[in-house]
Image (tube, rainbow, N blue to C red; front, top):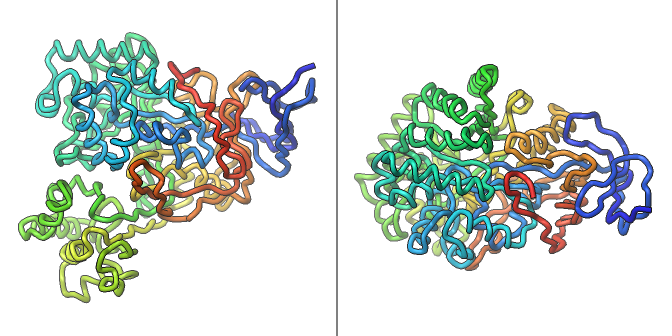
Length: 578
């Protein structure tokens, strides 16, 4: 007779492989799925009654920046609250290994800007018990984890280690430096890295460095990327994540095809997104993915599906960096920002860029939404809140009309009046369910781009899994449950080289979600609550989940009915497996 650890009974099983759902029981033993369906060969130590609930594989979040947060938050929330059981770290070429001790503060300052992770939290919460990449993996392995994790070798610290920061930003690598980078990537892959990641956003990067200059990889030459791809080709393992927008789309896409050809390995392309009134935007990208794969190139599109807005202050906002004038205004200390936002030369430059966009597009074009449509959401933390309260609820455009000023001057004036603590809301401008379904059911499209752990004061993309199921499956009926779980678990696990996860199968690790589809909810619905739960009493925006009966990682529940169990059964997945 077999003694099981857990029986999940009476559930509707959706196994992640597109097999039609069926009603049945599932048994877990020693962290793995011991049996699906039929009659058990013995009793279970405990049971979960899943009557009326869905039983499915845990979600795989391929695009995160939890490299710092996992050191103080084993569950990688927001993602961990929303059914994610495996994450990939080190995206976009950013990370903390290899980094010498004297480079640690500079590495944290970089991440405080480019991914908007609070510096004080990193300073207080990071362990820094590693220097090299293999040592970083050993540290990850030792950490208590409530999720499984893979990690890339991020290219920015690799280049900086070999070339030095200034050289890496200003010139191509020499042959000797290329050879050293290749050797270090081999070493990382030997230790268990899943591949490498890189961001190439050009001279006017929308995700700039701490000092406002482009990130190391933003201006990296093609050859230096391709020599790293040769490492994966030599090994015939690993995959590459790339974010690339340099202003020449045809050239960018052609390079990614070349990268797939040279490496012979899967490429995760960021990002495919829907423009609600311009379907050709996503259709052209999907056509490119189809054509690339028809050539035998394995390129997957990571697709943005989350319905969310941005709530931000100019004290912390960093996503106007593709504008040289805005970049100049929003970098530096608090005092420097206050001075620069009142500087007429800088304002003139921002107005000129804004007016050029309006003339070309009919409105300003910016992450977070058109500037004139931003809503003044809150002045609660401003010292002179009583004087500014009368503006709450108005758009920047409305206030500009009242004051007889340009929207840029209005926004900057108000920000300065409130000590940079006036909160602006860039509302979700309406996702198109039909186009989103078209995008996400295309053959090579994976939902996600949560950016979990990044932009913590104004973005909550880690809730994308719950939102996707509630919106596209339940409310709109555009995607079947079977297709949704294939996209949220099986396909990302396959693309990223997970060996035995992303599906429910006898013998597989028991990464499982049990949830009530009718009750699924992201709460609060839009931009999130403020939680002071980071080290150094730093705050972030959070969106929690409702409707999950249980989230299991390697057979152990990490959350039950929304409450954390305190268990940390997650594992470092070297080479895609524990």
